[in-house]
Image 1 (tube, rainbow, N blue to C red):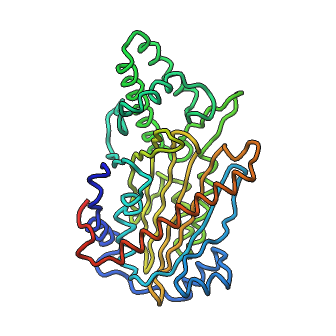
Image 2: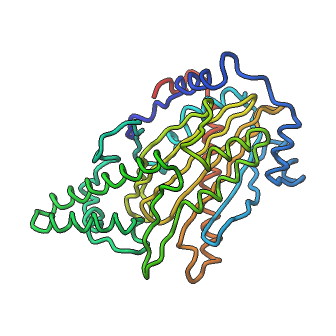
Image 3: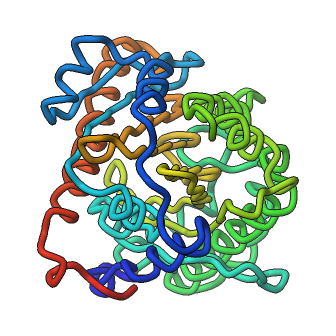
Length: 357
């Protein structure tokens, strides 16, 4: 779904999805005690709760679980009905309205062996495609040893071809690898994620970081234990009221095209909804990301909070403390923009909101 077609995002789809999840008639507002429980679990201070009560967007500390992780948290109470927040989250607006995404597409459940996932590299990205064929263990590309070997085989076939043909071959080989990664995850979950090969025989395993990130679900009061178990055990034992979607995502990061695979999970309950974005494969610059966004009905509207965890090897080297500080600041800016966009979108008159995917 290209940027030009995303001006119209799936508002009606979101409302339809909510009907499927929670049945006719959205649940009444959750009791204040539930919201307080969530704030307790998030460790939001008394001073921050005062700021929340007056409508401020509050950034709160999130414990980082490894030396390569960056994590931030935000919360806000918005004077918007829970049903509208739920429609926004269920319809994938967090993705559709994300200006850092240049292109994305949903991936169907069934695809033949050897299928391609994601877009071709453009003509201006030919250099990136060509460099894939020379990939080696390291941090320039996130690839397993088997994937590196597969690309080398393609390089052998492409050596006698014109540059444009070689770039197309590299592009298709990479898209085939994306499909293989997606199918492996769909069939085996976290345990099926192939580690990234690094220099000197080292590896980085995004499965480890995503397992740690799943513990954030425990902050969700009654929803927490079930969602935590779901995140750890996917695809096994998926409750019927949880909905899964898969996408390829394209961004531009560090002046390079960046392709990733996203597992989006939506679960709605009585007066609440949780939206999880699990980037279980990313092309370069970081290792994995999980963003958990929750909304709980509140007497003054809806409590919305979001926790973003990013794993990156780039904070392990010299100057790591400064890099961590800069990285967290960038994450805060991104999360603040997301929540500001949510409020702005839902505050517009309904006639100006988009009505179709």
